[in-house]
Image (tube, rainbow, N blue to C red; front, side, top):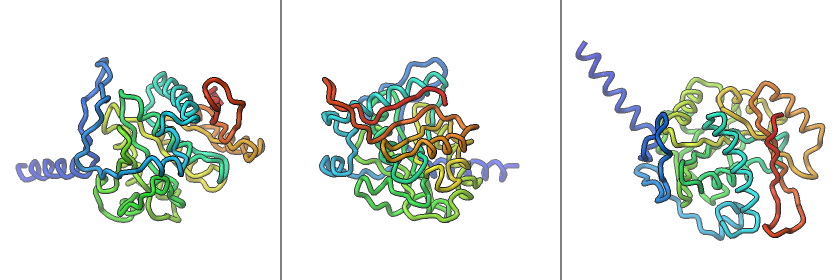
Length: 281
């Protein structure tokens, strides 16, 4: 019995070492939300310096508060947060009907904008396993990513990086995986997702998924996220494709759609792009 007890204790220690370890105040029950305004001290996560020029060149405008489009993502963030808090959700998956709708860029900008709130941290996970690209927007080439984790035996904290944005951590994909939908349903991935969602009570998790009509990945992953957000391209996504995508996800918790690349007349507060509709689908 003593040997079994020691083995269990050792397994517990190893499991803890294999997880992201950004220490922060705990939140439980009716306790007040933590104040993370001074940031988070990262002990294992790689810190990547991303110049503002790179952010602008790659259209990560939510990271530049003075940018004319930043308010559009703030509005999207607020509406998403309202829906998530009302339903006690902590995870959100972003997808779109077809390639080119801007779902990855929307996912990154939304994650950045969410991280601007000082009551929680944000983990952005690249689950577009066939075409992982989130890391490219930060001009960063990770040494390890989800492809390595799913195919081998590495610790989660070895994959993570923070792009010099307070309270935001990214879990990249790195190399393409062809049997992506099978991998998304694999026990190892499901266990990882559950751990990422529940490891810290003050964390929000944003998943970037492949397009709905391109593969069955998003449908396969739908049961493992609290909610989903659809991104459509103004002038690019047809009504038929959008309807088909929503039909595919008819049993999934789709909280609304984002009309990306939509131009609106200038007003006192800049452009209204993207425009979000978070009414029930």
